[in-house]
Image 1 (spheres, helix red, strand yellow):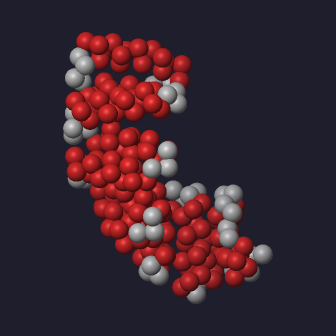
Image 2: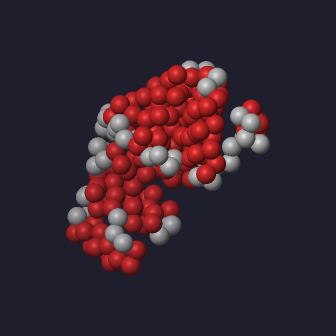
Image 3: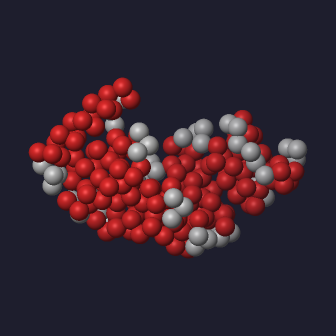
Length: 205
């Protein structure tokens, strides 16, 4: 993405590219991303749709369309576009991560775990997917797996507060109060609001 003061120039270049070659999916995609940056969502969506029409394998465009659905609160549309993304490119970790996120929002924890595991296999540096996976494992009572996913997340980003919160809960469930307090304090230091009951159980309130 170009820097802010060059966005209009970038948009003009993409429009010119499309005018000379309307079938170029990449130009439509680039223009869509630039328009997103300017919060011109409706026109951005139009160009992402053009992008996948011209280039059906452009997985990033499907994910952007899913993001626009999510912005409208349309979980079904978000899921559908991200499924198309991973169909276009089976190893596309962002698509799998988004599929997992939607399943979590819908309370479909088993489906979420399957998708999130794929996301982290295809991208072992996908912090958000590891963190959501840790949450999903917690909901299933799979404490050791939750801890393992949470530790991978904070190894990638030591200041990721949500991951510390998940680890605090998982270690509390495991009965390891020392580790639980350590991660709870880390989450608090990073500005995360931990549930009062957890703080009480850890003797931090």
